[in-house]
Image 1 (cartoon, rainbow, N blue to C red):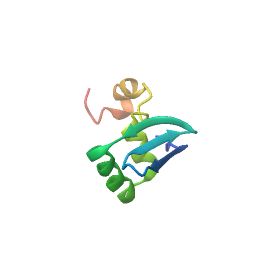
Image 2 (cartoon, rainbow, N blue to C red):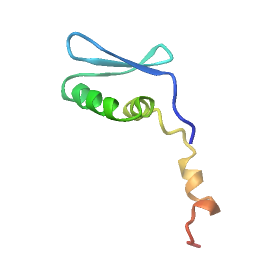
Image 3 (tube, one colour):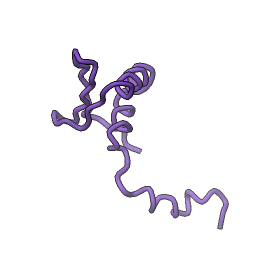
Image 4 (cartoon, rainbow, N blue to C red):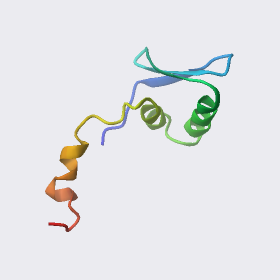
Length: 76
């Protein structure tokens, strides 16, 4: 799976967090969600965390990959 890139975030004075992707606003988090995001982004891969929080980590090929013979795990 390709690593996501181009994400950045900014914590604002009012406690909200704005996540951008290539300079465009992807998501704005406030309150408890912003705090949860900040705790998670510090402890993990920041690009992957931001992609997951914005929903930009699924691109439509998951359904096809599930039925590929390589991913059957011995099931037939």
